[in-house]
Image (cartoon, rainbow, N blue to C red; front, side, top):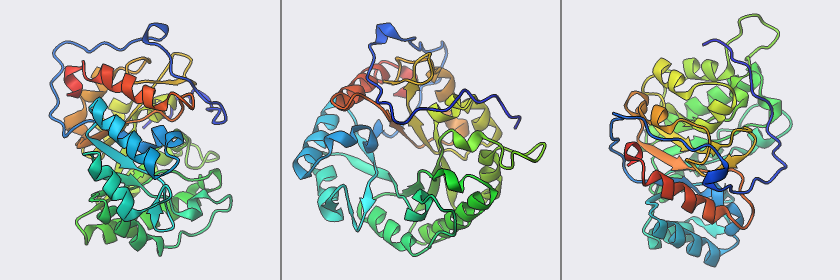
Length: 308
């Protein structure tokens, strides 16, 4: 696919507050949009990470989001045999007690967070799969890599690890995945004319493996790309989506429906993409408004026939 002009770098150090719908552009559904058959609205737990300070707050937050109408949650924060300071069993119980399900989770190999690029120890694979299996998850998604890894050698190490993860996952009836940001839409080898995007390189290298792609719609659009075009070019490769929105200034993340993304156009591609689960997410809210951000998102989503 042809390279588009990137829209700029995001300042991760800035906290972005929720904005009211009347302060941002609102997406309206197109006519004749096919109603989507889905398996329930979900959210990525990372959105409310600052509210997850212990067992009581985790339980209370999960219950509050269930009361909003969320039916499933995508986990994050697995470390040292547990999640967010809880044992895997206690974390699973908190999800179950809140009457939520968790079909998918993010799992981070420590090597990918390192500022030194190298190989990725496959010893983490069994631990990730054990934890995911205990939560009843099918999808084990690797979510990010540090800047040192964002070159051809680093992506090749990632591909090798993802294939190994996918093969081990298949033995348990599970699936491995990769979640994108915007950096995958830079040329794989900037000094080489005609170099493909790193995202294209990953998609082609992992074709036919037990590895899927969780498309973060916001980050694709933030990188100057059209998510629907990628779905059309690689049909069936995106069974998981992150649904998040951003304001016209492109730096400010906002609740879904309060930004500039054309969600009717995106969800019209659900069947082509092979969509099975979507998770609402907002990376940045004001620290005390993260739960409110989720509530504002689902309130808008509930009114859209193509998202229900």
